[in-house]
Length: 322
Image (cartoon, rainbow, N blue to C red):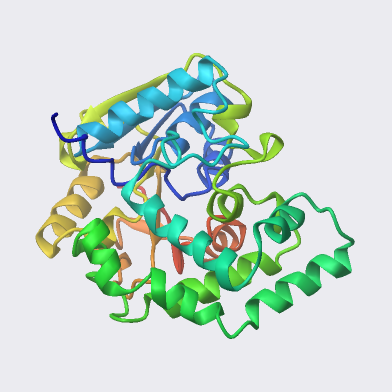
């Protein structure tokens, strides 16, 4: 019997597409480029803005096929396949390498911090607000809170799951504390029970009314897939918004220099560049300035609005006049 195919690295992309959506509205954008990864951002933007030309690139062809499978499942309204109120690890939104890490975290929580019933109660708001606040205080002050993240976000486990690159510019050994703070911050927010990223981690799927936009609003998706890196994308000058996920955190210095030069040369004046950084100390602006002008206020606003809780910095730059 042949071995089962290796899972994709990312079943979902943990990025809030409302940020890209805000840039689309601000600029009246007609074309947007993004990293495919799990496909959620590209599909949600295509669903929300039917006339927007969305191009999604990825060096791993399996991620592009995964995105297409999710689009097809959405059109079929196959909620089970998309992990809507269904936590199977075989679902399209649970079948990635990184999702294994979060299933470990959920199992640790249910064993040592909060029962599944308590988690379900929280995410369905089945108690009063003061009781929900008390639940979060109890969880985040548990003697097992930090050990949960040390068990599931160790450098050894993350490198085994995703390879060395994701930690290259992170605080070595600091991922457990970073994610412990991020999840504590997220659970304390007013809208935490409705946060689809938290639901995905702690319930293993989405509540139907909180699922990503592409699941709740399926439409014939206009997403052009490109199998390759940024320098394989044709007609960069045609894009109004370029969203690079945290790609520039994990590429080599030579690649970063090459990509920045490409964007400085190709993007037209006024085009927006959105970059996320995950527990990263890498300074990106010097590679783009003065050809790009960065908006500190908007970047801070997006950081506070980003529901995925993954990122320590969000940079928003606009191509300056030539």
